Image (tube, rainbow, N blue to C red):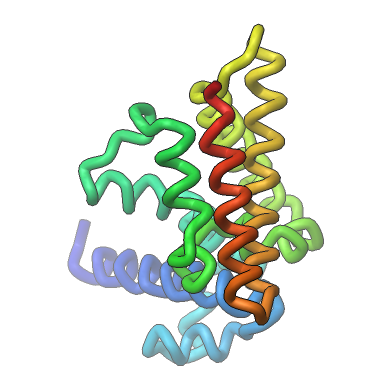
Length: 191
C-alpha cells in the first residue's frame, strides 16, 4: 500500500473511532458530521473522500463499537470463550461501564437510536445480538440449547437495560443497587 493510501486508511480509521465514541456518548443524532470531522482534526470537505453518506459512517462506527469489546479483551490477554457468566457480568454491569458510555457497549448507549436507524446499522446490530446471545448461551445452564439461549437473551437484555437504568438515575445509591442486582442475576445464569 502506498503512503497516500496508508494515510487515507489511517485517517478513515481515526474518523470511525472518533464517531464510534462520540455517537455512544451523544446518540446518533447528537453530533453532526461537521463536529465529528472537526474533532478528528479534519475538514468537512474531506468527509466524502471516506464515506458515501452519514449512514455509512454510522454503520462503520457501530461496527467499530461492537468490535471494541473483543479488542479490549485481547489487549488484556483475556479469551472471551474462557470467561464465566460472572466475569462477563462484572465487566459489563459495572460503574465503569455506566460512567463511560463512549467506551462501552452500543446496545447500552444506543438501543433506541439504532432501532430508528437505517437497515445497514440495524443489520450490524442484529449480527451483534446474535454473537452476544451465542456467547452468553455457551456460559448458561439449561436442559437444552433452547433453554440456554432463552437465559442468554434474558441476561443480555437485563445487562443492557440495567446499565441504561443505572445511567438514568441521579441517585448514586439507586444506580449502584441496579448494577449490583443485575450483575448478581447474570452471574447466576450458569447455575
